[in-house]
Image (cartoon, rainbow, N blue to C red):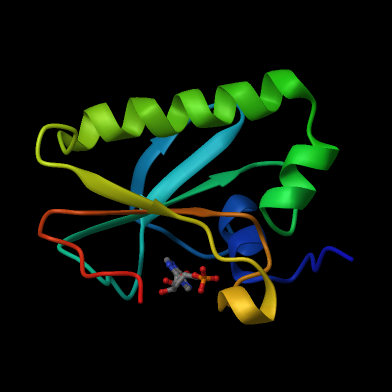
Length: 116
Ligand code: AMP
């Protein structure tokens, strides 16, 4: 079940601050507080969803589409498409997910190491 007290839910409710990159009707993008690369941005949908599968299965297709279009918009805004980037979404215990609100990590700004 979705935890309304997770840190990203609090950011969405503006109860705690974030360093904003982009906001629109369906999504919010902000800098990760503990960056793992020179550029590390998190993108979250505004609907309550725990992970990728929950998002895909609970959001309507228009919302899913708009969210990923927003990811593309932010890639442009960050000017990282030419040199490259990595998109990551962790899910559950084996995936190493810490915050149970679906999010995409955008990692860029330097060569990102191998996943394993
Ligand atoms: P994950 O392990 O995929 O759940 O990633 C959660 C990410 O959220 C981590 O990279 C954290 O550094 C990041 N994070 C946690 N709290 C905050 C916060 N208040 N503002 C920005 N990023 C955060």
